[in-house]
Image 1 (tube, helix red, strand yellow):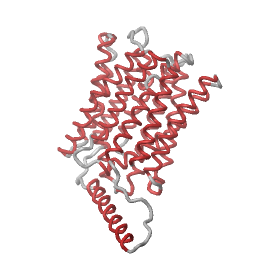
Image 2 (tube, one colour):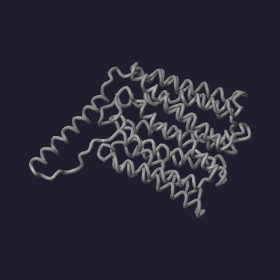
Image 3 (spheres, one colour):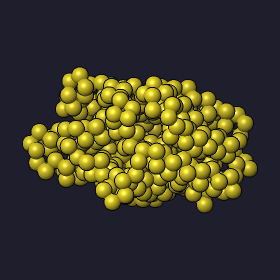
Image 4 (spheres, one colour):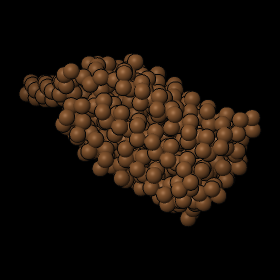
Length: 401
């Protein structure tokens, strides 16, 4: 039940994920594609130290609820400020978005810790997938709201959209006040780390014993490298942002889709992710997480190149793009659950925010480069570069993890 506030929060941000980039380039604000990149990348770069700070301070104080409430409340207030006349200025709009992003990430590290500490290690993948699946339903409903909000039947104004999203965050705040409680004891992550070290030691002793007895050594004996794991996270995040940040504008300008249809395409992406979260759930403990992550990164890269072929050949581009985004959503969901569970084992307590920092570095860089490359070189070269970065992430995870 404590996740219910996150559900309403995600409804708002699912709608905003498509609406804000499109709104920034309308005559009301007067921004460009590069402005979209500057806004998103600046927000993510500023969120990097903020993520580390929120992760450190919540572990230091062992208080998690207050930072979740801060995230939801600040989003509610800033979304209301977007409705005021002074926010129509392009620079002010971008600065408000950056401020909202810095405060918004305050809930990420506490949320990860709450899940890790409320469940045993055996249930982490299931609990993370359940949380992500629930919030993905919220994200999907936000896209559905966007579809109807911009249809000819309803026709919401921009001000109405911001009022609606602000109200949804108010609901999230009220539900979180009553439903979220800090864990009484903090020990599950430490136990998982100890178990991982003991398992590594046991495999080392077993391997040495077999070698001394002249027996063949089965399997692989290598300690997981957090350094290479971190590089893989950064590259995957970089490629994802490089590809997705200018995508709504690409659909609007190059494919000439109406806004309601863009929301429909993104609904397919969200639907694929939703299926992926519930698919991986209990299965995650029975598979090799590292190998599956590698394959999913490779799949995302292949799908990017497939989208390039679809656009070039003009082969039902809208329908095929929706199908490709659906598959990309599924691949991301499975990848994310495996990755976040591994990260909670590898990242020590007190440095929880490091996970968001690594993802933020890649996302911030890609969020600027994506729109910039699209405007300077065109969308197809930008997509090719994104696909190459996905392949580079695959190679790093394959060779070093």
